[in-house]
Amino acid sequence: MKKIMLFEGDIETQGYFSLQLAEAFQKMGHETFVFDLSRPWNSTERFFRFFEQGNTVLVNFNFHGMSGEEIFLDENDRTMWDALQIPSYNIVVDHPMYYHHFFGRLPRGYHHINIDRNHQKYMQRFFPQIPSETFLPLAGTEFNPNKSYVPVEYRRYDVTMVGNYTPPSQFEKYITRIDDEYTAFYYGMIDDLLAHPMRTVEEVAEEHIRREIPEVTEEEIKGVMSKLTFIDLYVRFKTRGEAVKALADAGIKVHTFGGGWDRLSCKRPENLISGSSLDSVGCLKKLSQSKISLNVMPWFRDGAHDRVFNTMLNGSLCLTDSSVYLDEILEDKVNCKIYSLTQMEDLPEMVYGLLANPPKLQEIIDNGYKMAKEAHTWEHRAAILHDMIEKEQG
Image (cartoon, helix red, strand yellow):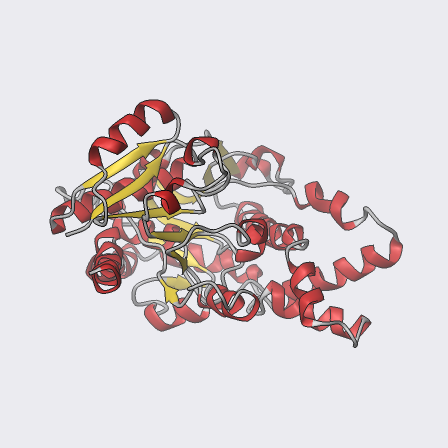
C-alpha cells in the first residue's frame, strides 16, 4: 500500500474533497498525510516524517503543490516531487484552458485526471505529451451518513441554490477591451453557446475562429483557447442567474447560499432569499434541509458536478440541466428532474408540479439517493485512484 499525500488549506472545497479521499484511502489501508497549505512550514516538517522513498504518491486538485509555491522548490527551481521522485495524480476540476501556463513545468511522474471527457479530448489534442487518459467525475458527500435523511414533508426549504453568482456584466471588460469587431466576435460565441448549450466552448470558439481566419494553425488555436476563459465564465453565470430568476419571478422562493446573489436583478426580488456563503459542510447541511436543489452545470458538457451527487446523498431532489455523461447515469423523473437551458420558462411548472406531489417527490429522491450511494461517493472515486496507483506504481 502506497503512502498518499493530499492538500488542504487553500481552496476550501478542494481541501474538503481531499479530506474525503484521505478518509477513504485510510479505510483501504493506505497511510495518508494531508499537507496544510495555510501552515506550510509546520506541514513540511511533518511531511518528511511521513515520507518513504519509493512508496509515496501525491493526489492533488488543481495543481496544488505544483503551481510555483516556493516551499516546494529547491535552490535550482526543481520541485520537491522531482527531487524525491514522487509521482503525482492531479485532479483538475476546471477546464484545462485555465491552466495552460502550468503545462510547461510539470514534474516528472505527473498524471492529469479529467472530470469531463471533453477535457480529456482537449488535453489529448493540445497536450498529447501529458498523460491524461483518465476520466474521474466529481463525487458527493453525505452530511450525516449514520442517520436517515429527513422526509420531504419535514424539510425547511422548498428550493435551494448552493453556489456563487457573478453578474455576467463583470466580464464585459474582457469582451469589449479591443474594438467593436472583436466585441461582436466574442458575443457571437456567447450567443452560439447560449443557443446550443450542449456545445463546448472550444468547439464553438474554433468554429468562429476558422470562419474568420481559415488559415489559422493548430498552435494558434491552442494559444487562443487559454485567452477565452471569460467566455466560459460568462455563459456559466448567465445561465445560473437565468435559472434562479425564472423561479423567483414565477413566485417560487429560492434560498441561495453563496456570494453575489444580491446582485441578481429580477422582477420579484422578494422571492430571492440570499443566505450567507458557506463552507462545504454548511452547504451539505442546507441540502439536507431542502426539498429541491437547483443545479446549473458549469460548462461541463460531458461530465458532472459534485452538487448533483451532494444533492442526492442528502435526500434532496436534484433539478439539473444535463450533459452527455449525466444522460448516461441519470433518469429523468426517476432519480432526478432534468430541464433544458433553452427552455427555462418550463422550470416553474416543473417545481410547482414536484412540490404538489410529495409522494412522487419522495420517490424520486429515494431513487436518487440509492443511485448516488451505490456509485458516486468519494469512496468510489478513491477506489479507482487506488487501482490506478497500485497498477502504475507497483
